[in-house]
Amino acid sequence: MHVKEAIQFTHLLSGRWVLPILIHLQSSGGRFTPLQKKLGISPSRLSDNLTKLVSAEVVQRLTPYERRHPLLPEYKLTPYGNSLLEIAMVIQAAEEAINHGPLHRKTWNWPILLALLHQYARFQSILELLGNPSPRILSTRLNELCEMWLVKKEIKEEPKLVYTYKINESYRSSLSAVWKKVSEIEEHKPYTKD
Image (cartoon, rainbow, N blue to C red; front, top):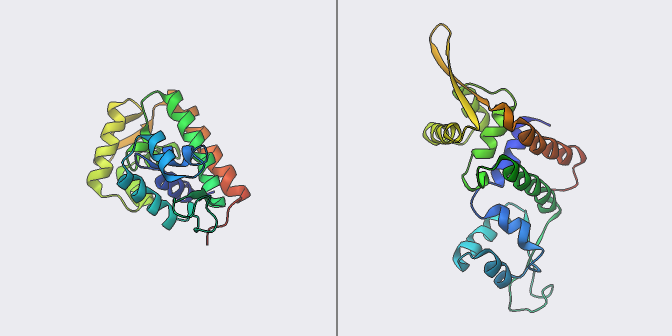
């Protein structure tokens, strides 16, 4: 598996509510109101997040004929969503092991950590790998990860001064577990996303 594909998976799981929605969707029976109450999220925010997940083909909104009650919205994970749920569970376990709070809540944290895990050490190489973030958001996230001691920032004297970043070794095993799971899922391709 390529690092870019792993980053796409982890970027899709970024955001405050995506992981909790995926993890609790099945336990709520796929019903909107029980899910909303379980998460303590506003209806409009849950609706927005579910709409994004439906458009990404992670979640399927059931038709009135498939629901238990035709007027109450219900959702279920697609095969692609089930694959992402496995990754979400590993990310949640890694976040508990790292013990720095829910890193998935801020967009780009996990993609940056995976990039650093794979020796993308210079700012420009990370930016090119990730593709979408602005230099400002990348700089902000790297500085936040440095403040948490997850990432080390070093200055190298090459022909000119260059900042490089690397993963703090004490967290490498937790991050490697996420990479391993993402690789397994991509290798076995248990989903079909067209």
